[in-house]
Length: 493
Length: 113
Image (tube, rainbow over all chains, first blue to last red; front, side):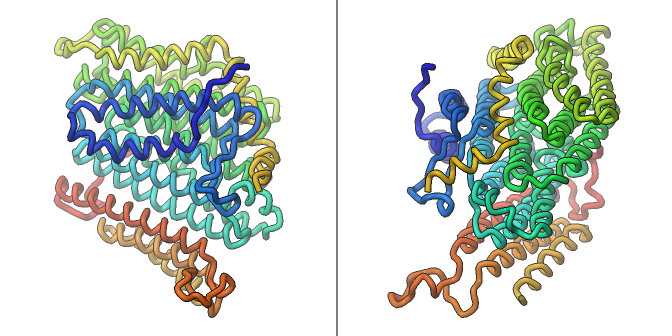
């Protein structure tokens, strides 16, 4: 197998961080530079994560930082799972950076690009790090820039949404820190592989307390019910590309944290049932709330929560195929949700209101944007041969195989509700007569390119699911069997 | 022991403030209190009786005379994060006040499920 040359993986975190703080300086040279910096950096990250993939599939790559050996020093541990998620994050980030070249409304300042890059830094760092405290620090970088981006449009609702998000987010991260304190007190180490090795000897009451604190902490970013109250407000008040980034990146990093904690660090048997039940409640609550939304972005936000519920069901089943299906669902969601958000952003701009009711007949006036929205909606609903079909099929058939027939039925009900509200919007786009006062600005080429990349990949994943699953199976194996992960880090000593 | 009691009471007081107080500034103070409580807990975990700070300030000190340095490094990082969160929270509070002319959280309720 011919492999691409790759650089030090630590650059995937260091470069966006450096670039984020260089942006204000670069802006002094030229007003136009800041918007192209994320494009360049994310292009590098995308290349790097593709080049690393063949290596990390064979054996987790351990990168030692500043010559401090694990378990004392901080190290990056790049297994298949982290690598694939880094790839997804870079991909979504790159597409959003392309979309950012030309804004729908007014151009944001350089601060926007700075925060965007910081968020990428945090999310990439989260999926690559091998140190528990480092995971917390990167989570904080991600969420602080997410709070700031939520409030980026300086209106009253933006500030309110951001404050809600900040409140729940910072309480949850304190919970994680408390959990880390408990773990450190009882194992004396912060390296995740080392903790995973020693956790068996710890009093199970302490492990349970730490586990609950961590699930609550990561549950906020991964939108588990009832910790997801921030999501609809933040998604709908933030600028459109930020909504896409929340769905495609922040949530994925949160789910990664959750999966890493429950599978690798603790592997506590009873917790999987709990995750399974929370998943189904999250799914049903979100789909029913989405059904009654009148604003399109809020509807998309609730649907995003529902998709995460499906991922949680897959994680809770804890069989290898189910976990692979859950990862596939995450991959699909990372492609489709940004596509829906980006196209919805234009639809909202054309109709001049956020309401679904004002989107009548857009399919006739704005065929390109409407086509992308409809495509995304069909892919998310799981219409074969698009990608959403395969991941849902795997998750639901695994649920039945594990003997949870009722849960499978409930998950299917959720999918039907989802189909109802997406079809309602698509129906309005195409089968209602348009209103007169629609703005006649065309979609900018950069947005079309961004949406085409996402749609093309979604179609590819739908036509050739085996290609994607070939890469996801090792990632699922990494979660199910933690010995390889531990071995890779311990071998360094 | 006293440190653990102090840490947990700080955390509980902070959570109480966040949940019960209606004034935005008091909620932010509550967040900072929870943070401070967790920091104190971390330091208390690493504390060993009669040992000194993990700095080679005096050539006669050996590693055995010092407290565990790792929690101190963690707390240093966590304090910086806490400052960032508090600063951001306060800017958002200022903006909320500009728009709503009130700090009472019950009167700022435009977004709902």
